Length: 556
Ligand SMILES: Cc1cc2nc3c(=O)[nH]c(=O)nc-3n(C[C@H](O)[C@H](O)[C@H](O)COP(=O)(O)OP(=O)(O)OC[C@H]3O[C@@H](n4cnc5c(N)ncnc54)[C@H](O)[C@@H]3O)c2cc1C
Image (cartoon, rainbow, N blue to C red; front, side):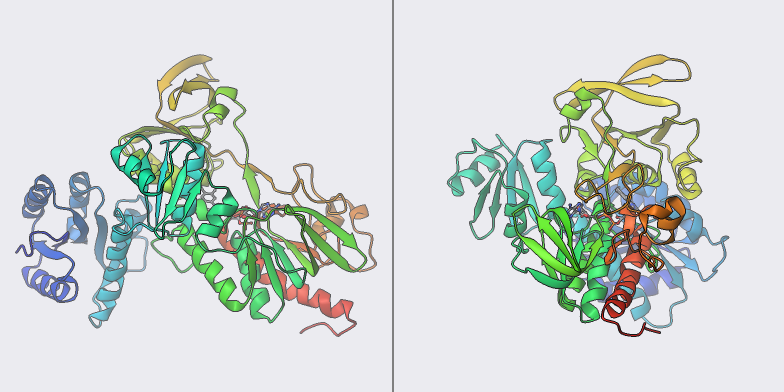
């Protein structure tokens, strides 16, 4: 049943020949211009055809199989590791449905439920699944060309920004012919790398974050000195606060030291965000929220770090690194946390050269056929392991504790246990490493004191972090780790922290009119949805504060 030999393949497997015929002709009608739709009624014939496409070097974009053929997905994935896997199941909202386990264990990327009432019910999701595949292919149009040294920390940062803002770009390793050609066309010698070349010919040599933000078209200059609400930090909490504040008609400024997205922007797949049953890329979610905040009327300034918060009477003044300041009636602190460091000097030196903090979205493709290690035992480490296992040869989780269950959600533990290429080493710490870029690490098993040197292509460090609050004045009460204390916690942790004759509002810090939301807050949940929830909630509470300040009655 093959069609157009040059197109990527959309492969359908259904044991019922009549149902297969209908599916193949329906899908061909809708997607036939861009994809060759092929089909099979048995695992054997499907595998034979998929082997042939693999040996012809023909990409398979999507495999759509009915639940009777779920087992086919394993060998099919080995032949075509980049094909999106879609399981077709009957409607059954119980945990018995094969879709539940298959999604949890990462054996499929998507599912669709049948029967569908009209064709649009299958066309819409299929278009999304195919788009997900297309997005992962090398871009044909490059808005930016980056010439640099593979593994260099600055290159990593640039690729991260490109991935977060969904910018089509190409990376050219310095020394290659194509890199030399790009540099010569841009009239630069390549003595200072990385070089970023925009499609309109603008060249940025060893660009700062401010240059990068400017190049992709976002505002990096603070030209506002007064507003009603100043929000510091553009992760999910700050971005949502900006959406809600601006949509309530408040004059809102959002200040971000880098670019938008925060930690969430580095997460390749957020599976627990409501409304996205197949998960959502943190970068995409944050990019959309940023656009939404802007369209609602928030004034967004990137690459501007808040360096101080001054309280002068009723005014709260945020000082910025460039020397400017923003006066606001309300300040929302949404600065999140910074990853905790490993503290192994040799490995710190290799930062960006095989050693990474957090899982940079852009790096996963580069891990193909590599031996990858992850230090950490939290949910982020678990998700990173599963994501990296799609590309890497081996993934080893190095865990200091005696079990994973204490720190990781059980669905992730189960998924890790059932992924053959992931190994877990308990009671294990990294004590050394070397190479340039990283070639080996040394680990010690604390139960046996045995030290082992292991070949390593990459090490991702995911061991939690420190809140970004060092810049705040002492008036903003924090716990011993630096988390900002808010609401009733102020009274419960130390009543002397709150000196006013009313109770602190929810999310309010020890300074009236200054609120804290998201990860930076003491006892916060540290999840995207909770950060979003707090960002939305804080605006209503801040409005109450403004009304009380103005002597107006509280909102109902
Ligand atoms: C790899 C990874 C995977 C994750 N996966 C999930 C998941 O699947 N599900 C889930 O629910 N959660 C996940 N999390 C956790 C989630 O991302 C965080 O809980 C969430 O991002 C917190 O949002 P936030 O807005 O409070 O802070 P952040 O996202 O940390 O954002 C804070 C922002 O403030 C900026 N900033 C800091 N200091 C300053 C300053 N002085 N001036 C101006 N700006 C400043 C930072 O640059 C940053 O952009 C993951 C985290 C990571 C790292």
